[in-house]
Image 1 (cartoon, helix red, strand yellow):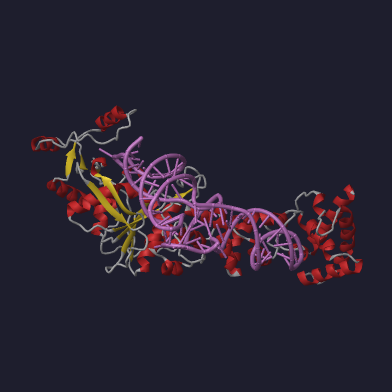
Image 2: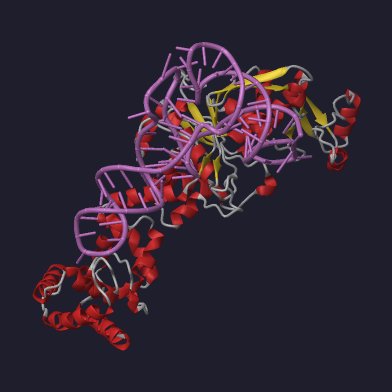
Length: 493
RNA sequence: GGCCCAUUGGUCAAGUGGUUAAGACAUCGCCCUUUCACGGCGGUAACAGGGGUUCGAAUCCCCUAUGGGUCACCA
């Protein structure tokens, strides 16, 4: 419940426990971030644990992606596979025997049992339920196997799994710091598998064992785990372990309302970065999806996030990931960059656009920076510097500037000799020359500047005005483009 | 379908029984201006619906609707 959370008196330990899929969802990133923020808020520890109990899903290099992504996002863990810690190993496949030991203990206690049913039988169970609306639950075929039968099966090396025996009656409740108290009927709980036939634990078992063994005080995870949490609590109770504080997070949705997914083409964190978003901006944006500081502040550094973060501010309702707002926020970060830094980032995109070396790229950067929201938009904005597009002369007509094809032609013709004579070629001198010309001709400066800008760019909108573009393009190219403009207009007018 | 969760403008959201229901993005208009962007000012726009409880409900309760999650030898 909101407002009920008290600062813990023990040291806070949170964990991020991704499975190595080679891909960092935005939702996963936020889960990691909130876990990190919560731990750091209370000067606690943030732990990275790899959940690789599904051998079939092993992806080469996926763990490195996790390390890299967290580093990029500025989320630093205190313990993890690559840096060690007092509670290792931090990779679940390396903890295999641990889980088996505890599963056996559960069998002793009578809250778990061997199951020798093969997949075929389990399948048939499902089929028999199809069409009807009955809950698909294991039928407990193996629950009452005699000790002799079990031993015989074991001796024969018959494959087995270990299942958790759910109570038949009663209810199980737990309190989530975000969602409040949730109660379910035990009769609805399935005898879930704890240990798989390959000897590996399921997530459902491993997370409980590891969270306990690693001293996790706050379990921060997506709310897709809300409905299985009662089963975990039953496990904690069976072991007599303290139940951690649960912090379930609302989902992040795509604009059409479903969960974000790679399949549907939603960008991952690394996708966003390669699209030209700044990691800090993405982290900042994601922090605000499902959490509010309670103030109107929107731009946060990581330290400020740590300071401001609180469980009370976490929203229960799912949030839609809005690219437009991310883009705006990225623009805020881009504009705050020192010019050198901006230039460094932008260089790659200049290259992609094919910008020639003899253009003053730093000048381009200084024009571009205040107008850039996302880096990958750069090539399209500056393409005209590389090659004058084959533009339509209707561009010369601009109502507010009071220009049309006729006076544009006249004015370009007037501009040409003046600029040809100009020796000192820079923005100020060009601007001065052009406005002076306008004065002499008795026209508004826009009537000179607009056609020049159009002639130089062939575009309706450009970073920088006429004189700035002329400076960057250089005298020769500028005169060349003005002549092209005159030609174009001559042909049509 | 069962169970669980959610529902404030197009989007993110503040709000915890009495507010002219904040703010941001987007959108629209105006100003600034060497085009565009930035910046400044302003506008449009919301408590899903219905019942209660209460002197008074966005806030509490119930029902309905809608959306989502979950029901694997995946995590």
